[in-house]
Image (cartoon, rainbow, N blue to C red; front, side, top):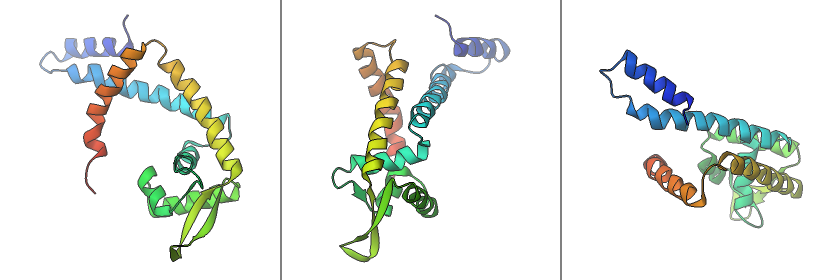
Length: 165
């Protein structure tokens, strides 16, 4: 079975036989897959009236376990955004009734962000929708192939995820 990457690699090999275009065979497919995944994610989230960034914050809180709360700093670490961006996101989610701010009992100046029951329901429903979309994307692969692919991708992404700082 031929795909668009096969066609672009063949064209580059014809036009630039002096270059080793082998990386394109893997990374162009990863890039194309990322675009398809982004579309699937947006569809799954929009069905629950969520933006991707909202899903990221809500599911960070949901994964924290009961009582589903984190400090803004912990949310920053998990979502990789700036402090100002996180403050804006928390404000917007609080206005929608999906999170609430509470005083941090261990730090008089600090706050905790807690998932509301509606936020929890919305996160759970959106996650279910996302997993349905992702299963459809992976349907052509056997369980063993999915495991092998996950291991290979982990090997490629781990160095980026483990950079100090």
